[in-house]
Amino acid sequence: MTTSPPERSRHVAAVLGAAGVRGAVRELADSTRTAADAAAALGCEVGAIANSLVFISDEEPVLVLTSGAHRVDQKALARRWGRGELERATPEQVRDATGQVIGGVAPVGHPRPLPTVVDAALAEHPRVWAAAGTPRTVFPTTAEELREITAATLLAVR
Image 1: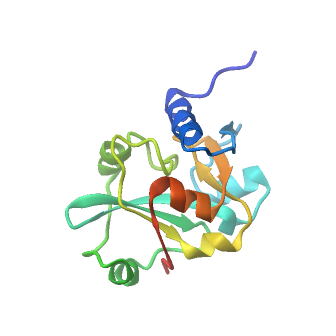
Image 2: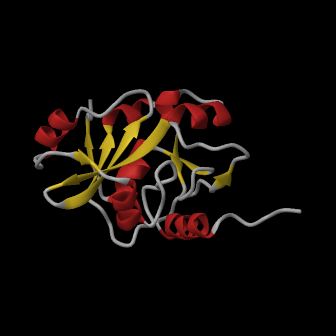
């Protein structure tokens, strides 16, 4: 028996479809909560995983879509982006800002759009994978498509 994707992932898929994204949301058997988990499940490089990280900057949530191959240099990114200090959001702040849980935050489908950066390192991969609203759902995309659908700035994040 086939089950339908979770409600959050159906919402993300609808937002992606409305934005013209062709890559379909996939539900995986195993968790993709970490970039290493996602890469193993998808058979791709860790660097091709677009981690969705929520930070608080200038008293508002912001989204950083970073390559799974490295960590965000919060001070350097804040300076490049022209924002105040970036502080990691708490799990509660992530859920409030996105309606989604850590490990499954999609680039879209939030209650309101968030200021967003797409890691320039993602452009090194012809296809990247991003979460689709839950820790077990993903969709294929590109760095440029992520930038377009989120109205993001493309910056180095490390």
